[in-house]
Length: 267
Image (cartoon, rainbow, N blue to C red; front, side, top):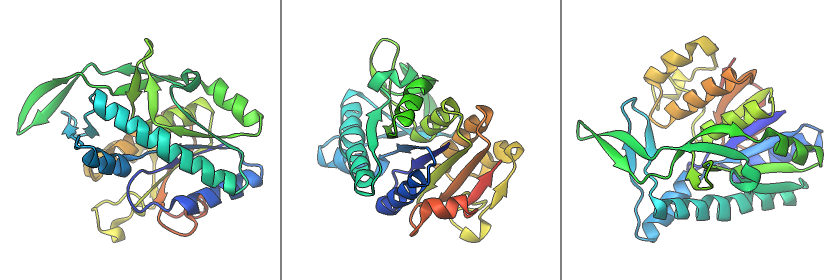
């Protein structure tokens, strides 16, 4: 089993990723696809007059502040547009894909962060009315049922609170939780950089292999948005995933290259 996370940053070659996924599925390899949508959500939010706001917590992790309006824009873009397009492209490539979010069938249940502590202008403050969450459980049985029926799940990063409220969740960490739930051997995270670099953006500092024990140190030098990917990798390995790969999603064969050893392999 392989879980593939398609990054939401600009530059990721969605068509190329889908062709590589199709090749694996046609070879009999079960695949679960997870996608983000950050760049398109930012663009649409600006056009709708509700610009995105990003906040940084005490640990240095940056995330999207999600009020109710932002949540609905995020759902419209990721689940309504991106998820549909990924399913369409996979279907065109001969894969019987099925799109769903974490709300469908209670696929991903998350604990809502009613208030988040942020650092702004050097001072700590609390932000309330936030619709983000931390995934606590995944309905792995639902994914196995779909896979056993010959379907390829395509999951957008929305989850549900226990009382039925939709929540925005980090797509990298969602991919990690899903990988653990289906007992995936590999989690491949495709983005718009070649992998984890010791000194971003100097590609000559690309780390090709990193032991699981080195992930904590990697958090200290990972470039902003890579921090959550490193955290997701740590969580996936902790859930029994054997290998996590960060790789370039902009190339002709993103997934094939990643599985052949290009990028950063963590095991």
